[in-house]
Image 1 (cartoon, helix red, strand yellow):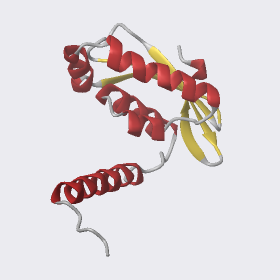
Image 2: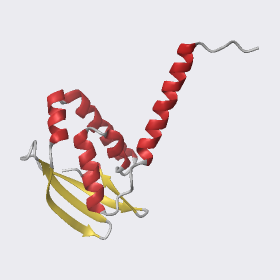
Image 3: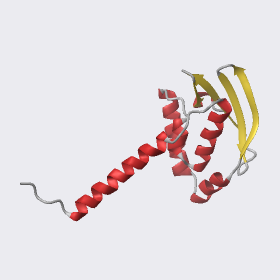
Image 4: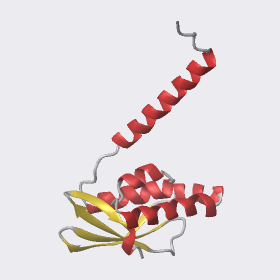
Length: 139
């Protein structure tokens, strides 16, 4: 016969199941971007908020972008103080210029209200009908 499970083992299994379900639910709750501006805004907002899972959802997934994104995440958690992360989370996105290169490539230049003098431009591309951020040409 089977030995009865200890109460702590059952609680741990329940906790793991809940965490796994919530992790899966988070990603499925993200909607693909309807256009380039939507992809850029969602990626930038998630990045400012420190929601790296959501930011990654809007990232073009190739080896270079994954490597750049991993560095970006490390810098966010290792180089920014708690106060800086809170300031970024509270910041507004300040779009500067959204420029169509062609029907499947857009350059989205922005700053944020916390570091308004820092301007960044991300490239947003449509690949297989999905708009995603390409960090390889980050300025």
